[in-house]
Image (cartoon, rainbow, N blue to C red; front, top):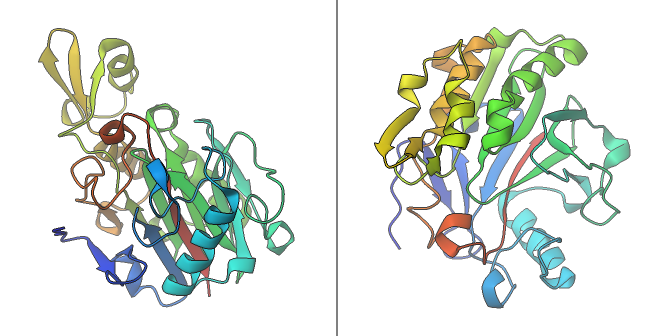
Length: 276
């Protein structure tokens, strides 16, 4: 397996691998990580690091995967709070009272695709397998956010909604946010038909010529990462504070779960972030 990235680092490759952003690793008060498909105990089509309890995997295996990953990446298993995503744009602020939800306590995040917090020791967890993870760090007021941006969440401007909610609840100035986008399925591999592409073309305040490319025969290539980048900039995040991953999930399906590459027979990855 070969891995090359200018934006991300592959850690602990011989045990329980995970990805980190070079840019976010420079922020001393957070810990963050993105899982791979390697290093777990799940079997069959979930082999081996599957983080989803809702895809038919043995829940004991998923729990063990979480514990192994947390040990590898330096997170407290007891601190995890997980979303229950279904391609909406709801942003939920969480505190220590929600620790365990979606992991070792019942799910309580229906239709929630983004989590934010300003409390130390609360680890946000969100899920992916081609969709776009969005990481947010308010470097001044010490608040964080994670969002799941599939194509519906992207055109629904979930990134903008996270910025707005962090501003409302934590006094965040968007100019103080450091953000990261991805890893996700990249424009090289994300082909859609016109009904989907039309939603992106209708983002009138953005430059869709940079994220929608017509192939012919009613097919288009869409750049989810660039769309989200433009949305964050429109929300007040500085371009120089945004890192866009150069890792495509479909192109790296030996390392990362990709819904398209596996035709849906897959496990799920997670993004993790906490304030130390």
